[in-house]
Length: 613
Ligand code: BES
Ligand code: ZN
Image (cartoon, rainbow, N blue to C red; front, top):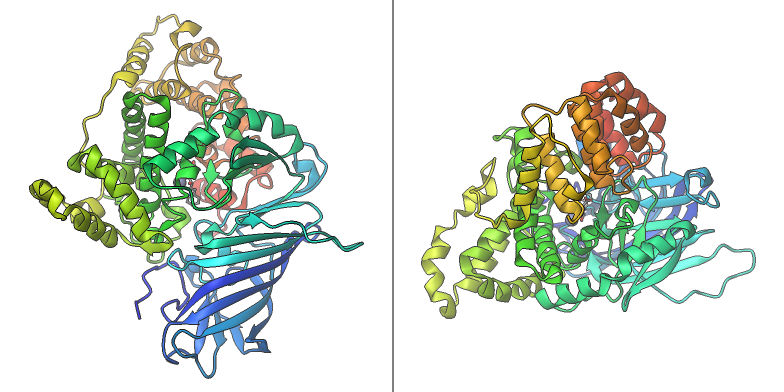
């Protein structure tokens, strides 16, 4: 019996393991609640040594729990910190090792559910129907239904979802059942690849779809469909082919993208079959679809091979950043692209570490999560420190060798979860083979403990700067107060090059003057840009310049996008220059933001109820 290795679950998954989950829900838009039943099939890991099953839950209403079809004794205990309230279900006679018991849980979500956002028709773009969507990573699945809410447990799923509007889920859609007169339709999906609870996903609303590739379609609101299809249709198959060449064939069947309303709190979420994505990637210039390459890459790193707890989250995100950059480099057919993107990542890592302080726990690759809410520990660190660790290993053994390790690692751990030490063992075992004998001394150089647990920046790699050099040169010109810009300065650049340039200017020790900052915005068309990455980077410069004329634009943007990457950084800066406006803007848009975003911004602005932080 392996000990529980995830500090963010209260479940006793060392004694019982969920093998299959059936989710039967009705989407009740009027009550803003999912209600129905969830059936968990749990396999006993011990020989009658456990007389209770403990599940995670958070703010759910449980009406009844049946054990093997008979009402059972159960109790929801008090909340303990960020992990929620454990549900204890008694199994009086236990179960023999390998025996499967069935728990049927009647459950409804409540107003306090942190995983779901409910939008009224007025909050949608065509105003015709309400909309709901879920976001379960990291530990929000437990606020939809009681479960073993840990990435260390994987279950297959059946979804039976009744709704008056189209439903999308993280399973393969099954043919429609014949509709009964007067009854709402039941949408059915099946997920045959075992997935952790954080990949459970649902959305429902006025959703239509269109093809974007041989195995892919995009789904979104009717008003957004054409633009979404245009943004993705050129690259989707290229991404899939490149990823398959790098790792091995895609194992999930379809790969689709759901473009959500603007309050979606992340850039993208790798829900299987349907990646959920922010509408900010539909920028009309195909400059932000690296998010899709990223979420697609999770089909191997994260969804097939999963970190066993949020302490080893870098195994998901670091590997995904690495695969994303390899995919995009092969499509651009330019090796300099890889280094360019890695330099951007390094810069972001430097900034995050500066912000936290170089000794902060959250700057470690492996972050202790005892008593910690994973949403609080979330940052770019696991992404970029993780990426730079994988990239370091790649260079150490050489690209040709590393490319053989990639499919080995992903097939060895497919459908399983692992920790950093298991990753280390897999790497050393693979390169310990006789044909790699010449690598021996290099392998012994790797400081695994230091890489896993040292806070702050890792050793700096050498990177090809050819694509960033122009960004530095232009930024240097802006150090001179009399520089006269022209739109041609950046007209041939990629969106990411403009972004690097803007980040450099934002970090000037002496900020621009308000006039100079305005000149920059006008010359490069930034305030009118449909590209929110660029627009928000520009607003950072404007706020650093104390250009008060820009604050209204910042407040307006904060009412249009709910992606936390923009919202949190814009709020932090606005709070520094005009706290009153920041607080008013937050209050005005409170209902627009997703519950996760709302809670984090509330903390960032120091607005939490006393004692709730
Ligand atoms: N899995 C993440 C999003 C996530 C992480 C949600 C942790 C909740 C908790 C997703 O794959 C992601 O990394 N999205 C990025 C995309 C980017 C790195 C291209 C985002 O949202 O910005
Ligand atoms: Zn990711």
